[in-house]
Length: 158
Image (cartoon, rainbow, N blue to C red; front, side, top):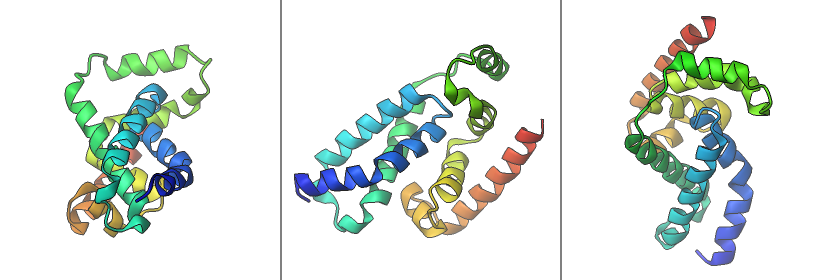
C-alpha cells in the first residue's frame, strides 16, 4: 500500500474510527485520541502487510481494539464508579457528559462485550467481521452481544 493510499483510507475512516474509540474509552476523548494516534502509527508501519486493501477499515479497527486492550492492561483502576458518576454530574462544562450515563454503563461491561456491542450497533459491522477483529468465533461474538445487551439493560435501568 502506498503512502497516498494509506492517507485516503485514513481520511475515509477517521470520523467513524474516532467515534468508536471514544465510545470504547467510555467518553475519555484524551485516551481515545492517544489510542487512535498509536493505532495509526502501528497501521502505517505495518501497512505493507495488509493483503487486501479493501479490508483496511476492519484491519484498522482490529489494531485500535488491540491497542486499547494493551493500554487497559497497563492501567490500574483507581476510582470507584460512584465517584465517576459524581464527577460527571458535577462538571457540566464538557459536552461529552450528555452521554455519561451510557459511557458509565459501557465502562462496566467487559472490554470484549463493549467492543462487540459498539462495533455491531454503532459501526454496523457484521458478526463475521467482529469475529475477525476480535479473533474469536462467530458464536463467541453472538454470546458477547447477547450478554452485553443484557448487562446494558440492567445497568441503564438503575
